[in-house]
Length: 179
Image (cartoon, rainbow, N blue to C red; front, side, top):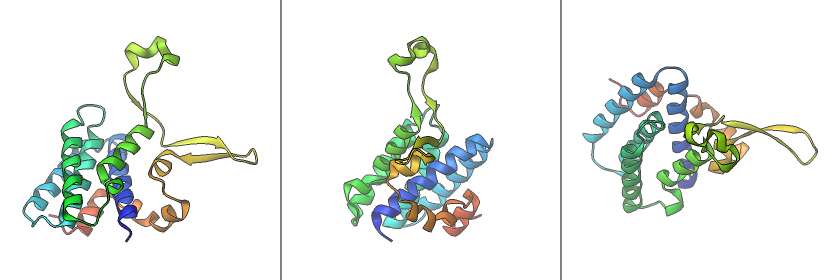
């Protein structure tokens, strides 16, 4: 698989699993699963694939802690992304950490001067993953903010739709890390 696409899908899935866990009240369960997977990966040799998977589970933790304290997880994801570059086969634009931060920026609403009345109280909020826009024919269409931030085409999204629908336990099992 194209390394650029692989990094985008890794980030999309990590974001999606973290976000859905929060929305469905599975934060603690997913955090435990991600930590257990990281522990299992720590016992393996540091190949590019192992480092990529560690980055994936670390990004899930970053998303789970996004509104509380994501910095330790983001720093770890940045270090793992650096390791992936060192191991070869990846350009700087394919680093999962940078791609994840594009998703964070696309799905975070920060207070602005326009909402000055709420500036001191609103803090940072998550926004909907989709938004409505008008196409060139005046028809309203739904746009996926994450897909746009990642630069994923509709064809790429459709091609990997099955993967994007997998649960965290299914991904862990596919990685051979199930208990």
